[in-house]
Image (tube, rainbow, N blue to C red; front, side, top):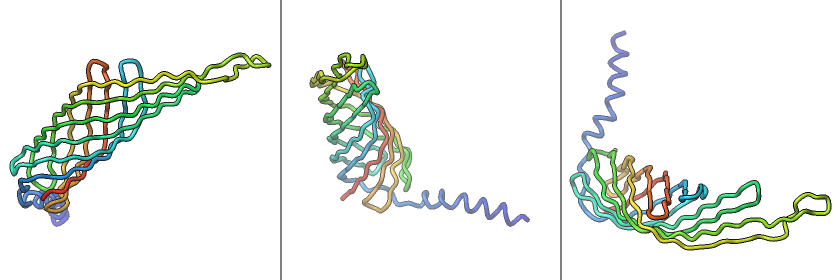
Length: 196
């Protein structure tokens, strides 16, 4: 009976022992690609769920610090039951500074971000009038479009998982906030990096 607790303890400690024996992360540049799902709002309303993808370059020091610059393209859509439609597309350029809590195969991290966001938004509203039966009939669409550029700040966190000596996956979640238009982007996604 004493064998079972020992076996369970050994199985639970093996991953930690393997991570502890991982070779240190090499210093050097990285190429990064990212795919994200995000929830975007502005100072008036929720603009919809959307997708973002991008890429960039970074540098990871042998210690626990890294930097990264990347460009992302995003697109969001929100449809209302009334026929109103919000379409929001844009580009953001961001820089990030990372701090990693460990140097094993699984590296929890926090990051601070800053950058510039350009947002192209279109809002379409149905134009209706009473039909023959008195029910509303759409006779056209009224459209409002505009482009805004903001500075933003943000933070993120996650775990960098070292798959090989040069390749890593980085599941992450974060928040970006811009001024003066108060775009708020809540993001979840994964980045992949290749070092050399």
